Length: 184
Length: 368
Ligand SMILES: [Zn+2]
Image 1 (cartoon, helix red, strand yellow):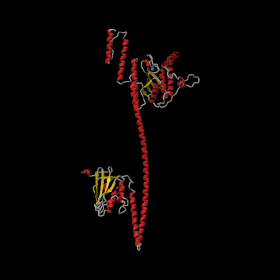
Image 2 (cartoon, chains in turn green, cyan):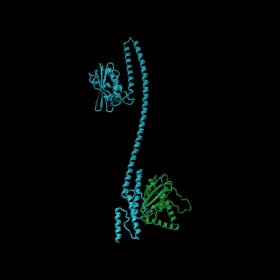
Image 3 (cartoon, chains in turn purple, brown):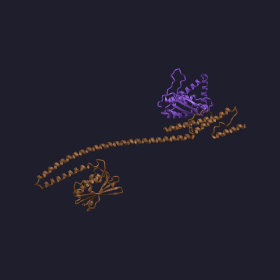
Image 4 (tube, chains in turn cyan, brown):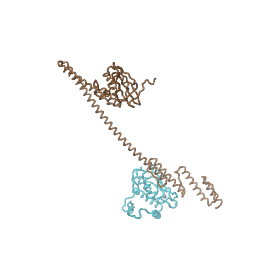
């Protein structure tokens, strides 16, 4: 089943769009930041994420805000797969590649707990997750963007749609984020 | 702290250390009950999970939250991941690596890398072997083809020489007949009849040469085989010379023309061993080397002729017999020499190297 790399994006071509994402928007980091370099403190990333979430929730409600976060993550996952993840012939190579990329870019420590490619079900863990590690305990998981991100990666790699749910999160006192992944 | 509380805590600790469920450690006052119960249940659950994990059952669902439970989940996630990695390795995927698990990562990764290197080396060697094998089989194939064309060429040559021989002998017979007729006519000049006789004798020699060619051609034509010495000696004795032998069960690995060796030795004796009455064929084994000894009771061979007799054309007849013997024996590494004493008979010794002779038990031997 992991044979074709049939990434597809459902975004429609729309001439009226102002912010349609393309990898070019990441910019030329070497040229743009010769002194400061490509890194920025995690606080800044989280500041942006959580205020954005705040405003989205105020304006559209919790459910819609989560949905927007999930979809953004999914689009990011697809783009990330296309631009960063090395060509992978099989699941093992894909896992290796994701593990390396997430480690090298400081996103998190990616680990597989279970994989059943036939059934299309997986359990992935991300330790030291960029979004939630170190956050105070809450009564809910927070890595909605990561759920979408993993769904996007799987979708781009396999060509099938996936549902991803975070079952454990740093914020629920679990010290690691655990995601169940299921083919639709 | 009240005595009650202190006792309860002591009791709780005691139960914890004994690995027992801390259920009835304390009967708290009503306001403290929910806190106490929560604490008790947490401890109970953590204990339960630790028990499961330490027994190797790592897939259990940990539903508690909080720092301690989080650590447990961390441990569980790591164990599950490592198990998954080990499974990949057992399925032959050696590309997996474990990050950030300290010494474990190091040993796991170096093990996987070593396995991967080993496998690569094995694969390279296998490839080498396959290549070698392919080269070998193509060489074998080439050799087979060469052998085939050689056999074909041989076959053609045989046919050609057989036809030539046949026709030459016919012509020779005709020419000899005419010469004989002419001898009866030419009478006045004594020289003419002498020359005629010489020409006839030359023609007989030519016929002998052609006969020899016929035999010699067959040497080495077919692969060697095992032959019983006794059966080759059978029926060799003539009316004049008897033959005795002690070579029962002895077999030699030789050219299919091997029987001609003994035939020619007998022919040689009949022609040259004037007055001989007995041939004795015996054998001797020395350090894996077999010697077959052929002796007659004729006049023997002069010291100076011992080697020369094996040369082509030496001898009172056509002188091809002993030459042919050597050629036949040589096909499988056998040799022959003459080492008799002049005056007490000829003695031919055939030497058979180790591996080229064997003793076949006679069919009656196990009845004794
Ligand atoms: Zn999380």
